[in-house]
Length: 500
Image (cartoon, rainbow, N blue to C red):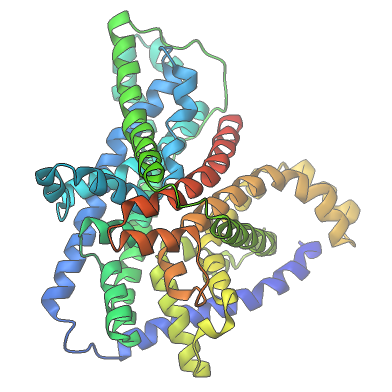
């Protein structure tokens, strides 16, 4: 499309830059030897822990999210409207906050505390409490689009409610479950503060130990490369699985909710209430108790401003770049090249940070940290631009041909075409992606710890400083501030999903 030619040209510098970073990182990672203290047994242990943790998190998040999404979408039970949005509130909790809440609360009973630390099954369960909303939201959105038509078709064939759910509805949710599970796994492999608090030695923990303990960038890059390859394998498997199970939806439709018996009604309400209490009420109340015990620990206004500033600026920059990339690649025959810019979300923040440190050191003999906060901005934009691009691509692909043909009216003016045709169609997806990026940047910890300027603290970095020393009470107040800041965005995000 000729009127988008300029945006396509503007996309190339970003694509070249991203390609140079990752190709250089891979080359240096493969070409440099490991130091003697990074043994084969240590690598095997870290890789095994990472894989096992990912598998368990995938199982636990699905077991929580899938029933909850079916209940709030298909059944008329006590409190359904409340739980439809309340069950996604734990998304405001970073998993490293969950980790120190449960570990700190368990210290009152020593044998429970000892059983949580270094227990990979319990650690995966704790992490899943904060990650299941990813799958919950996707399954809920999928059910709103396809669940109704599938349910009606199955009922017309004589199937009862439970046969329909088990035999028809669950298989139709497979794409959403896979997509949500992949997101949960990416969050798991990128987490540092949570697994460090829980005492699980994963690849991400290894990267930080090598970097902060030995100041060895090359060995850190080698471990980062392993984590990068693991992320690419997970991304590839998830993509293959989702493509092989694509289903066509019929869009929204009005339908009467299933009215369960009184006993089942109470059971559903009890299940959803238990999930809500465990994932939101208990951890939030625990933070309030700890915070109230330390009255002198004032609300960290500077930390709130720093986190808000980084979140807003990164989301804004990512939105502008995503618009250029999405429109530049629209109807393009070189779509594969443009897809290179969307792999950032699949790469842990620690890997991206090490990549930038290594690449800038290799080409310019300086650290990316000399650019101050802009080095951190760059890393976060690369990492979190992916959701924005995917949302915008989906919006562009759903535009009607009649709408696209109207672009010929403004074919000589890109600005008028964008303002009158593209922006109205992209705005809902752009806002949704902006909110997702905003939330993720505020909660991001590994990249922030590695690249933040000296003396510059955010809510996430301050939480790590306190939790690394076991100071749960001091970590409570910045955690509450982060959760409240994220909570507003999560509620807006859930509202957008419900209105899709």
